[in-house]
Image (cartoon, rainbow, N blue to C red; front, side):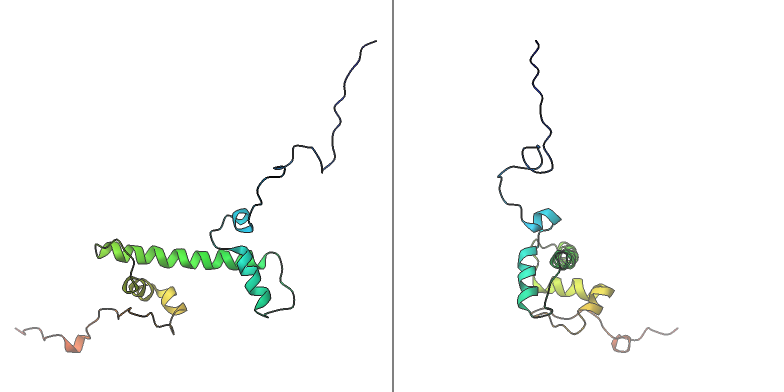
Length: 133
């Protein structure tokens, strides 16, 4: 008489080696691979009174879009800072980044950036005339 031990296959839940057991809670931002807070976006959408109900994907999408815009502006502002041999991004570089980019300029057309200054441009009429020969 040979005694055999049979290992039972568990269904979906239980000790089926699925996922981390009792580990730390994973934030929705981490699940989506984002830096921006998905939970906070969800709260703002709920409290903002934009709609009676908010889908699960809406705050994730919103966080992703805002993160992309932020990364885009910071990338361009960082380049502007490097062009001016500076290591710190100041409002001036944000202004230069936004106004030199066609799409960002259109998006932020009615926005004033405090301490941003203006783009350097001298009108052709004001330049000294060429010596005619």
